Image 1 (cartoon, rainbow, N blue to C red):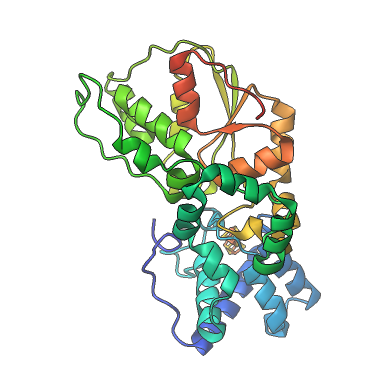
Image 2: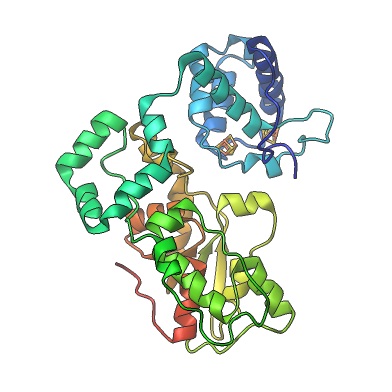
Length: 347
Ligand code: SF4
Ligand code: SF4
């Protein structure tokens, strides 16, 4: 896929170019409307254009700014759009929003809180230094009030729970005898796994000793090499497919893996949780973020599954906060099935 996922996509040039491209794409979207209700950004944009009787030029600077602010960068509109490149209209709405943010940062600088919240490596290092203390501090009401005042992090938003650093745990492990029969595997882990998801990393590492993760596990299964000595069923699983995986269009590998566990049924929930990046943490977008997640939460309620699973730690935070359900990463669920452990619904 090109366009929305191209990190090196060129900017539109100067402010006049960006304004012209913005008007061009808004005009196409106003005629199409397919993305109405897809996210708060489109709902706001299309409603506002309607209020101006379809006159794009009548949009105020504030109205345009709000369109950009309400885009949380999930990129879901890209694969839905029939007019993306190579179509001659070359609509790339996520790229347009990204370039508008870049132009604003050039003009106005990057706000202090965005500098802080965007530095997940630094926050992770501080938080994981003494996780017990960090997690206590993050739950303290006075601290949360101060955090809201200084960084604009909504005090109601549940924060990621810091854990010991995954890389340190991993370095201390001794590979078991016989490991490597299926070749060498490089395990790339994300910043959230390093600082707030050690359990996920550990589950990935343990499963890797049996074989490996995600696409690779499916590949091994296809080759008949996947260990299938599951000790227990997972029951009825609700699998939340995160936006970034849906945009990549690689299929639902976690669903396929979980379905290998005997006696397990998996329902895929293809809905957004409205959390992307730091958007769902910010005070001014907290309620909008919950509103985006409501259809997904309704699906979870209707299914009332034994286990809720998502590959996305931010989506897990949203579901856990809104429903009090514990959300597991697919490899945590697989590890429990191998070990014959029941997974708690809450906690
Ligand atoms: S992004 Fe594409 S599909 Fe969505 S409203 Fe605009 S033109 Fe239509
Ligand atoms: S990237 Fe996501 S949030 Fe942004 S406009 Fe597209 S669908 Fe909406």
